Image (spheres, one colour):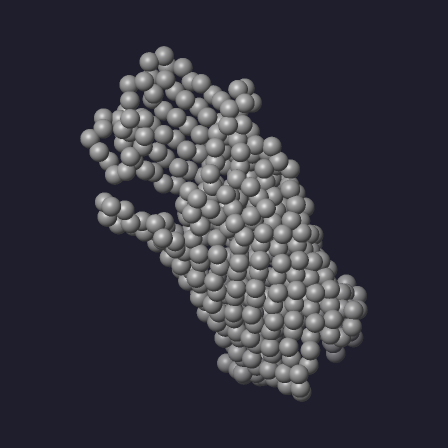
Length: 447
């Protein structure tokens, strides 16, 4: 007797994960750079790609969910259901060098990162859905300074007025996506992701004075974001010979104004009168999603070697510095921090001796990668810090009596963030991912 059996464990895992994902999909950070713009941009790659430093635009593989290029969904096998979840643990070291010396701070964070599923709808048509971090905000630090003739001075002097400033913030954006990829023919595929972006920006600056007249000054920066973003992609696979394949991928996401109006509350407290005065400053339609263009190429040899190179451009310079205006007086509160175009290049590779072999050791995937990215920020009229990153990882096959295609993905990544005269950040990340690759209907025979 034959019986069709759907994977019950996969369904339960999918339901539980998507119930909790909106609460925890936001990655965590302690970086002071996350206070600018919409925060630190999220790494939107999944398990396999993270070991290769996030490459994926030119990759079209059957066994993974590749959000970076929706055209890749067309490669999903007709009987396969793929479910991918991941989390990240990281430790960061921040260093600042001033005329008073070097200060150092360590921070540790951990977070659930992403959940995504992919499956075949019909011949040559695959779909995917999931949740990913788009940006993250999280910082908490304090500074001290002196006032001389109404100006803030560094380093501290003999002035009697001291300012203690506490900077605290949190928030960021999530991306809930639904995508499809269609193979027009054996070599050429197109695809699209429709993303719902939502989240908030909540930053606070509290300044306490030792002056007899002003007791405290508080600035609350807030914004709520809800918008739809579309990503388009295509891939073309070119057979070079019997053992080698080259795949070229292109992606495009149009930029637009999302219509959000951030605002700032300025609250002053007078020590003599004990009266609080609140002024509201607002910026109309001040936020944009940038135009994004990506290109990638990969080379695959004999199902053993996979090498890939990606380049991504994001047009952040179209988003001008936020101009806050008081609703009562029309007075402007200047914000000199702006934005600039971001460029990112990644290279990564994977080696597997025999992905279909009987030996466990032969089926382990070994991965590596490196990358360089410029910042999209301008901080005090200076370019924001650039990023240099390196990664290594393994894909460990999960083999049991029901399944031999699922994978445990473990990767390690080092990211150096640095710019002249700014805080240096060295972050070490451990990424853990589970890729469940199961058959929708497995044929079981009973005697």
